[in-house]
Image (cartoon, rainbow, N blue to C red):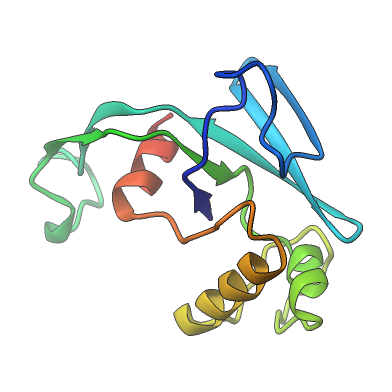
Length: 144
């Protein structure tokens, strides 16, 4: 999940929603606390990258090409991990996952379920407007 809010170090202060913050070898991070659950987010700066798989890559599907340059003009915050079952439980009061565990990722949900989670989260914590990442944001984050 992503949010387009400002970089925490740009002004010298963390975002208003941050319960903790810092910088490590991976770059700036902030944490948001919802009830007793903390979720860390990573800052991804604007940048350019080559999106898609090269033609000869093993396991490549046709829809994964052709490779092309993508420019992300705005930085964004992204959850460091998939949404945990603990966070889902805190926000929604329920956990539909089959393979349960507080720190495990939520599964057994549809796109509509995810949208409902985001709307509920955003209603309760409007300072951090979350959305699902675009395909370009997701691949940019994965390519590091």
